[in-house]
Image (cartoon, rainbow, N blue to C red; front, side, top):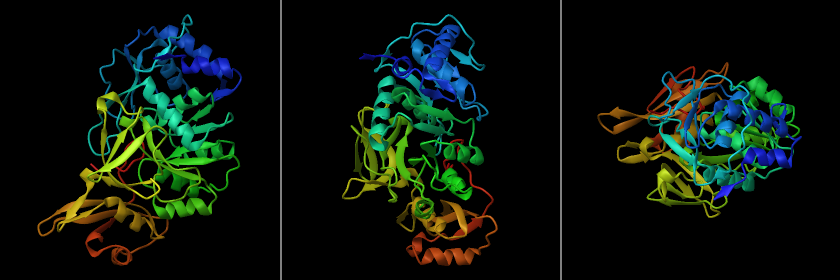
Length: 415
């Protein structure tokens, strides 16, 4: 099925509406058509976009889509980033060529090749179709709501699905996107206070915003938190500050969101399944079928994540199957122990992992980052955990460290 291309449609419907930065949709559409002329890409040709996040990246992305070419976003922070067999590389802003006539979007055709974030294995290339992106936008809009004056702040990497979905979602709904090249807490806080209505964050960046003074922003209607479970203590901080949070669970193979809570819903889970998405648990593993799922993932996406549903159909993610720690025959989810550690008022964040143990097979170890100026003894933190966890789940060793290893998108790096 072919549909009208999203950017020209937005320009036709709302030509003077803000699109990207200070550009209106009419201005962005004209710029992209000329950039596509300069690009000269053929339908089906793979084009690697090796540009920093921002306006020129967005122009190159839309130029590929108007041409029918397949965009391959490149993560410039990697020493040897994968290019997924790209035929050419765009590593400088596109100039102006003769404006092209936009091609319709074929919903069955690959639009973008996105690499996974590589939290537990090497990044993998995932082919996402125009249809995947469209259904993702529709599901997200049904969960979070949409308004004509929405401004979605994007400080996530545009080489990954979370940041890309903001650009495409905004074009589909003809709303504004405010793209930052990298995470800068003060700049993000200023953008929210200046009128952003939505912002995508991971738990760490939400904590940084709260530390910087985010509270009851005048127009913010949702801080969408992904990249891993949000600690209950952090949700309590957001609630106290009047910051409406919506937790979400998603992955690259499902084109971003799979389940999403309502804005302002502070329950410690990832909410119900998106519109037209079916999620169930099989042998403890989260399974998904949806028009958002990449064709290469098969009819059923077995996520490798562990989870459970409550009676209201709300998903709680327990972690990766491959990350489960088996100690003395007992299974322990690292995220459960991390949540207890992070509930201590002196702890900023924690990472829990299994270490080889000659007696128990694995023992539980933790790396902990303390809040600025805080002091805490290992024995006191273990005692705190012992009052809230079964004995076999209490870390046998705790190391206090200045920071934790993370992927470029801010997720904990467990491999």
